[in-house]
Length: 320
Length: 291
Image (cartoon, rainbow over all chains, first blue to last red; front, top):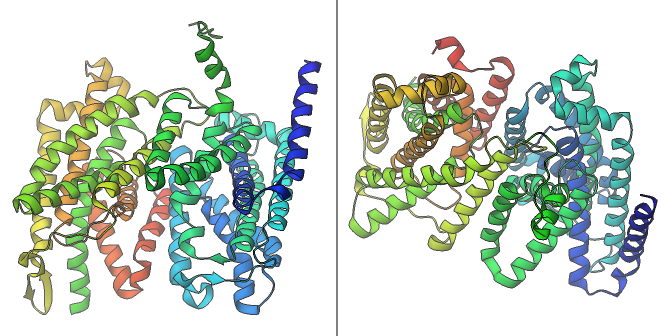
């Protein structure tokens, strides 16, 4: 076991050095892809805290992403304050709005919770499109980029946020909170019976989840320098893809979402470059196959994949 | 007063069409107890089938809906049998993966349709689509009225099917208590596949009824899917009477929202109802009506 731990640490260390040292030598497009990867890692890790560990599958995390993006955008629009303040205001806004959302929707279970979040996500999109005096409506908000065409600073910011997100997730799931989250996911009634205040602990999972999703939104807003309700509150492009990235990697594992997010971004960029518009068809098909054959994701079902390739007889732990 | 009456009638007529689509959904959700997000996309496929029939053979959607319903029944049956069935009841970390599967299917179907027909807006406009007549200052659109009539005929036929025939009663039994139905000798798996096909065929009928009055494009289904859910939750899962009353209620509420608040917030009215019902009336109108 000790040997294996060293091996893992070495890989992590090498990976860490690589993501810090290599990007300056890459071209603009690859830097762009790396920024996208970091953004999706933040979002997938954040979603995984609430969805993967606590079992509250949210189909409306675009609410927090959008609020995170609009926090800075609105400051800039109304008072001309630098959108970088959005890195603080955006996530806070997401948390402040997220707490009442959680208090209302956590009374619902399973698929009903998912649907309620979906409805909320769509409601926010419609409200931000129609509430023109405050949000500028469908026109969106255009800001200016601090560093012009330079991508590297944005990459390091996104990387730092992603590292922070993974660290916070790591600390949370290895603490008392993490075990409480898992117990709620596995059997809410039993958890309640053991004296865990489930709604409160769901909120404890929601707060960091909303915060980091909002932070990803703020990074997005600063990097793209343009937001409009239809992109940042999008159901299929944000809420659903966040879940897909997590599911591809493996929900309820620390590195699953990281792996899934990287795979998702690379796949979607590569498919778009190679086969063009058909990639929008190939992508959901890949999702279908993953859910049908690897329901726990690539990291979560790693043993299953290894078995399939080594052609060994499956070993059932239970009494089958 | 005229405005009030106008709003009420328009809402009622559109609500009837919603009800047909939503009854398909409520049957599927009642029997399978999973959330089916592919429903709207299949409705859209039916609309495109009607469009092709209209453009190549001149069949009005009201006639084209019959072949469309048959085709969609088969598609729904096969999707359920060969794909959704597989993940039904598999032990995973997140049981909601089924929901995601149906959603991924919906996105894939949309893209297939987009590749074939492009994203352009299309319609089956006939002189009939613009016809309307007046009743005491209120205008009533003829295609809406005919669609509403056909929709109600479908609801009535379905009600008779579910209460009077053996197959229909098996569907109701499976929806009420799957285990008990199996003990009574109902082949629950076969019934589930059949119900999925039937529900999808009803969605096809609803889509065809919408076609004479609305535009058609590959993403047309998003709001209708949302409406289906709202109606299903409002009416109670598996209840046809609940879905009918829920559909009419939602149609009226939406039209009132659009008239007296703002047309942009039309869909928000539905979502607000949805969340309120989830919180304060779990089980839906079924609880009140009692069936």
